[in-house]
Image 1 (cartoon, rainbow, N blue to C red):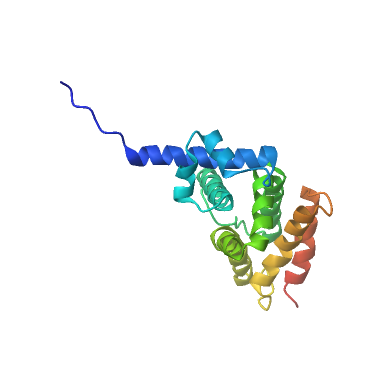
Image 2: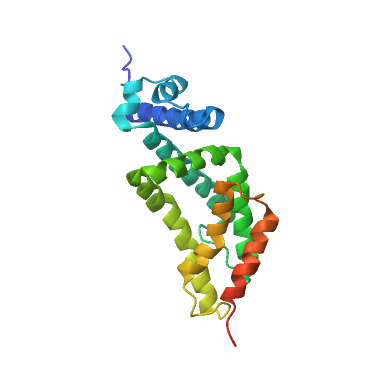
Length: 207
């Protein structure tokens, strides 16, 4: 009698996690965060509600892990395509920053990212623990990447060495996220280019 292998529990768990992540992201995009429930995520993923509660304490925690997983997969795909995870360094700081901010605009305008990002931003503002985890896992690493590119420009004599790279980073990305979050105006490539132009006026080395 042929020997039968026992089911691979780890593989089954990974399939369940992936189904839960996909369900959470889809439901938030389709119905909004307020109408998304753990029960709805479980039904969409084809798992029991207790499976979700065994791994996460709330729908916000599910969505955060789903979004971090999406961001990691997107970064991995981009890194494989571009051969890098840092900001580009072509020697032209303005061109490099325009390229990255335009890509950020495209991502924020993408419905795949817009709804879950807004939900997490709103939830993180009232849930300090969730907000701190989102910042540490996603936002802070992104800000550090910008700061390192500005530090490289300073070392190359292309940016004022007296400028705080972190402050310069916030001058670049802060207005972009403010306009997106509060819908104070259209989020376009032209707006991203204007941000770079204005920020670089403050970064230009003084004679």
